[in-house]
Image (spheres, chains in turn green, blue, cyan, purple):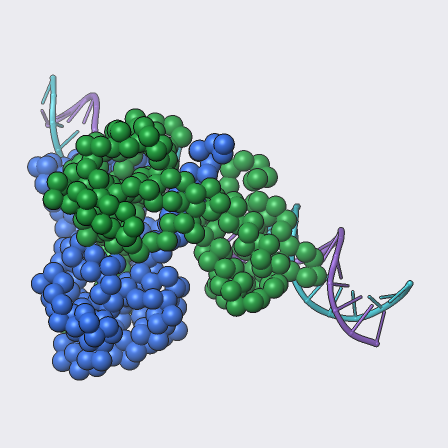
Length: 214
Length: 214
DNA sequence: TCTACATTGTCAAATAAATAACAATAATAT
DNA sequence: ATATTATTGTTATTTATTTGACAATGTAGA
């Protein structure tokens, strides 16, 4: 779909936000929008919006703007929301259970089909609409259900090991919440590291700047 | 501490990661490290590391490298980990409870001193070492305890309203997990938006690239 | 139908970020 | 002591990203 083949990461990181704002506009019954209007809502420049979108094709019309519904759908397609990747979650602790129940996977191109934990006490426990399965059964489960994406909510010590095991079981994409920089040396595997601790520290830096030390 | 006064956001975003790697080295008993060695561990260039650090001062020694313990401590100080900002969390749902129990606030310059929810059924319920308080008591609590930082784990519809209210109660920094782009029009207030949904969509984009559509 | 206007897509310019290069300098070995 | 090596801090260069400008083009009103 992209004109040349590679679109810079800076652009990709902005796509979900465009998608979100367009969805909101759609729900509010807005039919069309210009790059200028959208730029004011999103607090960025109209030029950037037009240039970002034109990485993927000319979705607008001169003198008119963009059709909200159409643009939303195009960006959704670019992001892959219609793929419904089969997804498993490893680690049913506090964070894992919260992610499983709090995130709407379906609207983001993913379908959560299994939750795993190595702790026997958690086995069978219900989390959302699923029941926790022992990590011992990962091989069996993956052979049967062929999940493609894994969410990691496990302690850092186990992360690389579990990730390597999951790669061998066919997982191609990782959403990693563990306190560890997952690096995958295989090709064609993608990783999105979410470092909540780093995010908090960034805020602490900001707070340290604006709040005078007494 | 910064040489001129403003350090670019790109640099700031990398500081927590430096801090994390240096902490790990320290715990492993490593005394000194060169920018080249660190760059290999962190998968970035030695040049970038030196340039990043020199925004804040010359922490290294020519022909020797950096003293791990000293550099860790310097970066920690820059980030503000020794400030211990008083922090409250709003929204004791799945995500709020997970954040409260899963994140080590103390090691990141924050001290969680209150958890709030508007739902009467949750009032008094224990989360970690704290008990949930009704949001009706926010004014009283803030007047007494003077929190400076707030974590928002609430539905998007309420976010702007609660944030405005908290600003009027003296909150200076927000860690926002709600599905809403919090924008604060007051000066000297900092916001760190964590959009887990956007993060997942970014991964979906990556997965869509590497996993062939059947 | 014609005219005035709005707005895109794209090219050019400006700004920001990352990388490379290297002189200065301290550590270490001889 | 002296020479050699390692490594920083910093300046220069390159690359990437953002912003600005404007011709091309379609819309909408008279």
